[in-house]
Amino acid sequence: MARSNDIVELEPAHGGAGLRIGIVMSRFNPEVGEGLLASCKAALVKEGVRAPDIHLVTVPGALEAPLALQKMANSGKYDALIALGAVVRGETYHFEVVANESAKGITAVMLDTGVPIANGILTTEDDDQALARAGQKGAECARAAIEMANLLRKLDED
Ligand code: INI
Image (cartoon, rainbow, N blue to C red; front, top):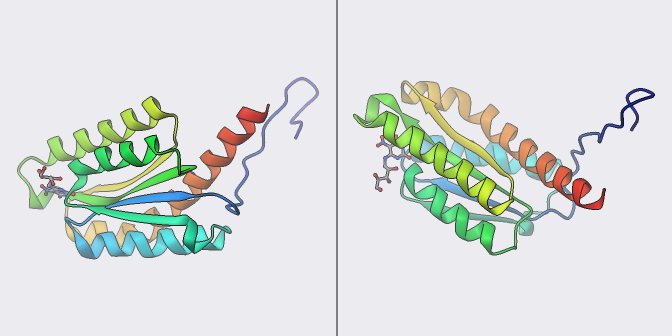
């Protein structure tokens, strides 16, 4: 726990046992979404989250993710949430709008509700880039969600 004589550090905790995790996945890029979901789910279970404690909802696109996340955060049922999806520049003339507004919305929900949200909405130039990143990003979000849920619990206890 102690890093040195004069400061006290709360160590990151990576165990997921007992945590309830909500996932909101955009269906806009189904192949990328499924890749993100598979790696995310595998990493959550590997860290000890029980499958029945992982709840998935899907939304049409990344712009709808913040509202679903807000509803889930306000329900009080989840220790952390995860947003999954992709915004691909080659597929939209309003790439910046979708990418920026979805990220802004997700951050706003997290700060307004106090429920951690791992943002796994990829922003890429094309589908190939998104598919290549999906495996890593899904697992990264799972680990970030668990770590932040555990951190908030520790800070509550502190
Ligand atoms: N939604 C995405 O999740 N990814 C995209 O790449 C995308 N593009 O390309 O436009 C996208 N658009 C849909 C948007 O999220 C909303 O669903 C739509 O505007 C209706 O509100």
